[in-house]
Length: 152
Image (cartoon, rainbow, N blue to C red):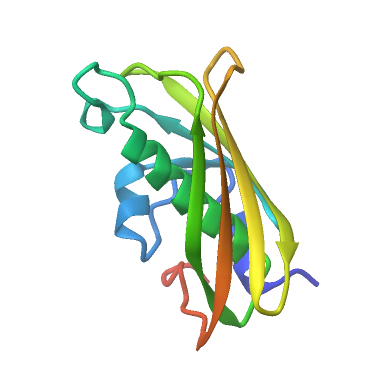
């Protein structure tokens, strides 16, 4: 039997993720392409408000996208306590111009009682790797919240 978090997210495959408590996630307006336990794939359209003065995706937004999707990926495992980001390492490899689409693949590498490690890869429409990110998450011991409150 799959966990409840996974079941709710799996039901949203192919849709934009709007029913979330993450206001940053709502603003990003990403589409969930594939959901598996410990793995996700999403697509994001690079809107003008995501860009730097060079009209490319701002590095801070790449970090936001990574943090959002790395956390969501971990959330698919169904832990009963909340894990929080304690570090985020991003390698910026190529620029992404405004109006482009990008794809993000995230995977949980390790899920322990106290710590977890998750990584993601971001690709442009030509399948060129534009960024790579890793994070370590720490178990806070606090009960997990319902990230998708209106999905039953």
